[in-house]
Amino acid sequence: MHASIAGGLAKAAHTARDKSCDCLQIFSRNPRGWKTNPLLDSDISSMRSTRDDVGLWPLAIHSVYLINLAATDEVLLARSREAFREEITRAISIGADFLVVHPGNPVGASTDYGIATAIESIKLATRGLKIDRLTILIENTAGQGSSIGCRFDQVADLAAGLNDLPIGVCLDTAHTLAAGYDISTEKGLKQTIREVERSFGFDKIKLIHCNDSKAPLGSRVDRHQHIGLGHIGDEGFRRIMHNSKFQGVPFILETPVDKERDYNWNLNRIRELAGPEEVNAAREER
Ligand SMILES: [Zn+2]
Ligand SMILES: [Zn+2]
Image 1 (cartoon, helix red, strand yellow):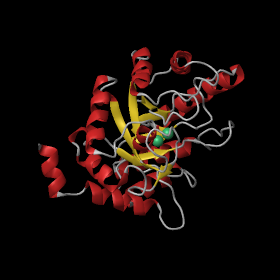
Image 2 (cartoon, protein in one colour):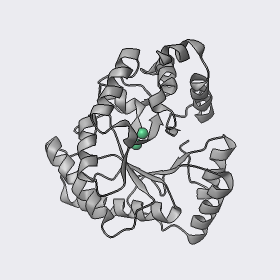
Image 3 (tube, helix red, strand yellow):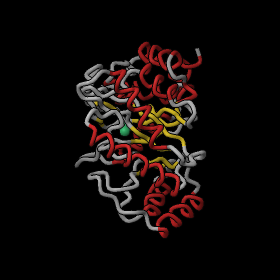
Image 4 (cartoon, protein in one colour):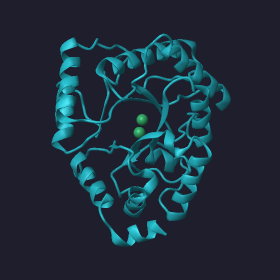
């Protein structure tokens, strides 16, 4: 689950456990605004001990959205690199397993420029830091505006440019569909899996962001929807959850919370869809 850290990091770990979630994703800081308060030693130690007590794995941190590692504006780029370095040091101190980041948006420049800039940013941000226990996960994007990382080959290029570092991929199902990979159909899912294998490879995927998409296939618009109520749909998720390629990879929900449906609603929905279903299981075997 993706939980708020209002009330402390340890509380987020307990909330996850109360919902029988093994994995937790948090922001390690206020996601709005550049200014951060340093983490308190007491918060770090209580997070670490709570984590051990409840047996949480993995702990993922999502970098704040302000960070643009491919920015063409020099001031924004410098700020982004500094903020990302801080995300890394916080992730290390908390003992996080994964740090998720969107590759960035090179406004007014080419995709190639964006990819090269993002690679350079991550190299600079990690320079001199001991990050052996943390894996940086590049999240595929919907491709909104000129955002990079919507095509799997772009994600593969980013990962290849950073092969000295512990780098993995976070696959967001809503972004995947909005970027034009039709994971809502059986045929489309198969094709998408082939595309993953042809680009960065399935073994690079360390985390799945499980969200339905309010925006249609190929729209390049990033709008998360409740599980089953968007363009991926119940059947789409059922197939994904029952596909052997996706098994064993931790799932995090980043679904909306509104008057009718909350986080628990989505959690129950995805658990139902992941549950036994003979017809699907048989189809999957063939
Ligand atoms: Zn994200
Ligand atoms: Zn996501």
